[in-house]
Length: 120
Image (cartoon, rainbow, N blue to C red; front, side, top):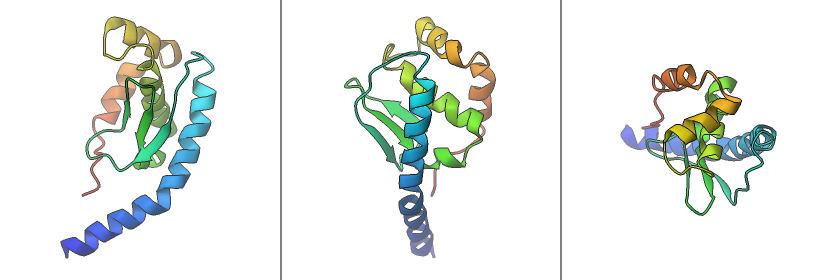
């Protein structure tokens, strides 16, 4: 039984990965107009517990299920990771950067915490 469920999760990931990547790339272009940050690779993955991440090399990673979120929450995740390109931490400066595009980021962050990432 579990094996079939995992196969279903893998199938869902494969089907939605390219769609999620296209969505994220389009939103990055739009949302980065505020910042003008330079990023390297953009990837969509089936991360176990994260909606997104940013490496010290400027690579941005997003969970494929980002396309299943309401648009305002997906935008919050994308802006959050974009701002890590300047501040690779969660300092006051980081949150000031996020607030430039998402003034209600605290409310969106709270909403996002009620949604689980895990697909298994």
